[in-house]
Image (tube, one colour):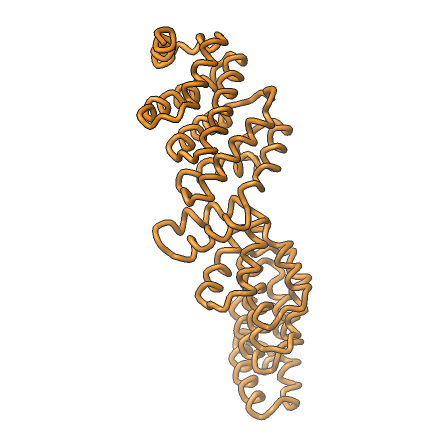
Length: 361
């Protein structure tokens, strides 16, 4: 007992070299596994010390520290001690942020760390879990630089967090629109494709308009990562509302490569979908926008043509291709209904003012 107290005191004063002693390691493990409420604060402090030891220059000490943390973490999970789980996962995270080597037992250590993080998520301790999930995400996408092997292992493990239950709870948390909404949004984004597919399914099946609108505005935050899932939705002949929602999200993402699969919706039977297609092209912008709006002018419902003309003049200025399209439209106006013909001519005349030339007269 005396030796154990001495060892703890030495560790508290930064003497991590004593971790090279097998007897010391075993006594500390026994202490951490002991279920004693009165010793909780001491254990939390000790786990923090092991977080420091896990980033020591000496590899042997790092390995020993991680072994203790892994054994202790497994025990904490069995009896669900939140404070000790948080302390253990914080020490693991400190190690992972700093580790550059491929240590023996790395797979086991990463697995234990993920188990601790998942427990926090499953029990709605989202704030405490967020930094760990964020670290896995940053390693996956490369902003926290690691070796290819470690990055691959972490990327594969990232999916452990995104269980159906956790996705449901965090999505519900996001939809509550309280002080945790930003936190929930960030965690969902860290879950990447798993979250995108889950959120899209929620949008499709939810009868709550407010929820649908909130998620339709969230999904574009995933950026280009959401594009494959959204394209797949468009290819499944969605309802008019589904098509409109997907076009809106693709427009918000603004990736130019999506136009090829989107342009067919200029010819959709529902004018609301056509209108969203026009809006999406404008949001995507770029050098091709005027040509794409001119393509839409050939296909959209006659009622939408005056709106398209307005956009062409607003964004195309004095493009000669617009003048040609205007003249052709005026020449064909007699083929439209009387009400549409009147609106088109008014819009065309207003647009032709941009082109003060003989052809316009």
